[in-house]
Length: 301
Image 1: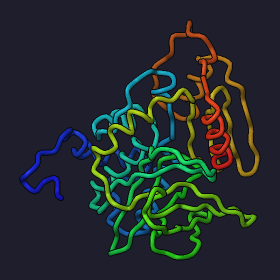
Image 2: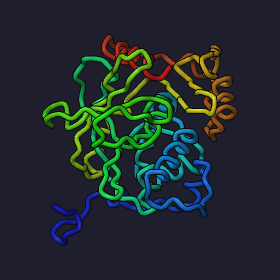
Image 3: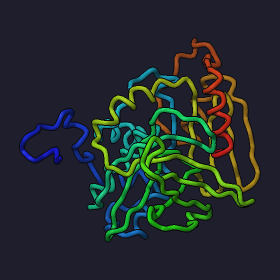
């Protein structure tokens, strides 16, 4: 059923608008706004890698600012481009999809179920993107800032694929509760871990509105960005810089210190906190969430 076949009007049309300025969005991810990014696998790879090295994964709105998170293009443009911020998967993959659509790519959002290598069945609360180029299907995910496949993964390729120096594969299954495919990450020692499972049936953007409202209720402060030499991460009250195989940690003891890290290391434009607020922010975890966080560390640290 088409949403624009004349029988139905689109609810929440703001989600279907283009970005206010495509050129500024390309500049935000470090690309020449006058460059040629016409649909091809090579250009898609270029766009993805530029995106993950410019837009951080972060949960500051829900953890520190108590702000409602939205993924309408105008909201994302203000947050990502004007304020040089980041977001989580609903926002980041939404921004990337808007860029692709502005460049003429055929793409749709997909819903996924996060696994991170653990055998725990959780609700679907991940958004990723499927891109079609010359009849081939690619899974494209820029929604983590570091640690995920940083280039397009060929959905129909049966073997292991080298994606920017890391090995991934696609496992197909029956489309029941674990979706149609699973993205699998292969470690250098030969072990493999399931990243997430995905339903390949394209979703309308409206189907992510409710799950986004649920996903934004997080007390865990995470800011994560891929760099040329590794990554930089704020994890709760710890700032971590990875350079090659070396990891350097710094304890964050105050909001002013966190503000300096966000503005200087991540180049964000963020409001100052009221320095009378208690530090550190209280973070309540249930046992399941602690297990989830331990699984994330295996993937991203």
